[in-house]
Image (cartoon, each protein chain N blue to C red):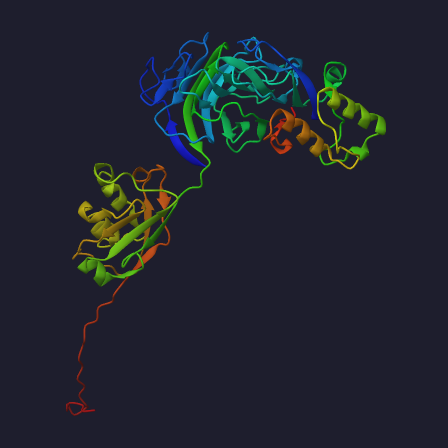
Length: 133
Length: 336
């Protein structure tokens, strides 16, 4: 089961402690969008993550990690409760994401692309994945 | 996809990988051990870039693992391949693997001027004889087990725009080496069209007389540089003119194997004209179909091309006039 998260970037960038998503230390397979400045340091203190694994309760329990709803990328935000939708909009706004135009008819893919393109303008959810093992 | 460089590492043990390889900036070298490439020091970060080819920005690097042993004490340890190695800084993308039963065992690392970032990790379960494959197209990186395998990790990153493909190792695991390596790009393969007075189809007599032409025109590729470089490939070009037949006095023995290199002319960057020598002994009993295969050594891409279409040499039957005279029962000649 794959789920999407916003995770803090941790590490110091040295060998043995690379910059990485906090989720990297949980044992989940994952891919993270971590753009760098010219000196190699992260351009943002947080990153977009897709994580695999059967059990995500450890990630759900981590208050530093924001959880996107567990819906398919082509599902609309109208398929989740208003309370859940507001939770998502709130954590996006707290990360500085402009949520203007995100409505119940917006697809989850559109939301992920908007978040990813804040970090890297050439981001596409279509090229962001990890083997779910 | 087109292969731009390969290395099977099948040579004598050496502290250096070889002439086409350059140690990546601020990394330790790889060497040759028992016909495989191995990090020279398993306790150091080792990377080499293949500097014997010209690399486009979009490139892939893949290698067959000869041995991978041990789990690294960290999330950024293992051996594998690299893309976009900088020629002047410790800047590169690495696709690496290790052995771990409890945690993800392969990863994509980004190193920018010596600063490490892990872009993802997954469970690849890599073992000896598996192929580890890393590609970058635009800002998309993909790590796979084999070029045709499913994506283990697919991620966007725009930090490193160009560089060379190669091999890489991030210390420390117990053992790691590679038995073959390949790097390439995603350009469409070139094509070759056959025309000419022979290339459009010839008769047996035309081949005997000589002077017919086979013109090979390339699209999406070019002939190697005119002069000595091209001249050295003329015999290989002739060797690529193959008949499907096997007659003793047929094309392969009398034309392909006797054609001189002087009449193989590089007309332009994309056109070569072969004017066939006269071959008096050419004598066939059935049509022959000729296929033109352009050798990779004659092309800038280094990739062989089977040209189209094939062409035929038409068998020309010879007739001997036989006269008959008939007599009737009385022995008189029959006069019609």
